[in-house]
Length: 337
Image (cartoon, helix red, strand yellow):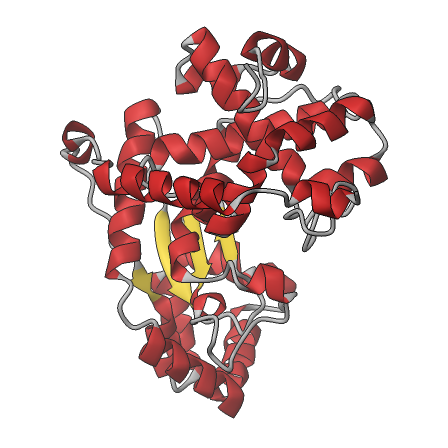
């Protein structure tokens, strides 16, 4: 029997039960009203409207002055001779017919992002709940010409909203299909929150093992789930519902592969990339297994660590010792008694 057959021997009944369980949990999930009651209001600024309305170099110079963080951090004026040069370059770009068509597509298909705004505001409230010192960054959308999907610093988030057109729209980023399918609005807030987790995710820089990388990603996804408690796992890690269900049904097989091949303490970057890197599948396990399975497995280990140690989110994110997290997690694949 081939490894492909072994991996996807999940029964239809298991998958159906997994779907029903996920949907049931999602329907029953409620956000914490006390957390949501915080005095925090987010308004995403649609900068593409202002920039595409600009007709002269002076208009752009005015916008630079109006949005200094965006100008300094995102537009990087130091790459140009001066602000006049930057303004002239943007004027040419924004008068290009293909860029105008892209902007019109964004206005037509992504004119309303109120749900994104609300979900991101709620996520910021949850981060504030866990980390009161968290300063809410300014959030902008922009039509980047498929040059930048997300730009995130401590005080600024720029969403390349053209990346998040409907997946069946003719305008698409130059990405493999398996990645492009994740560039849809439901994935946007989980992407941002997972990226923000890095500022709280303490690591041992001396540990170059696969286990350390798995735990790093596991902590990132655990953080995202804590901040977005009603968000399905698939939207956080970028799997379809079927991929999530199949991975759980084959968790014992996945774990056996890691153990039998003594992978946890592997330090070869090329070997590590097989289990953590972007790919349509984790071929080392099965060509039918979703990519990045090492990250998914790390998430399960971190979840078990939280349960076994009754650890707070802050404790988990501050723990640098990946080996300690693994050892104290008592991790066992689901289905093993």
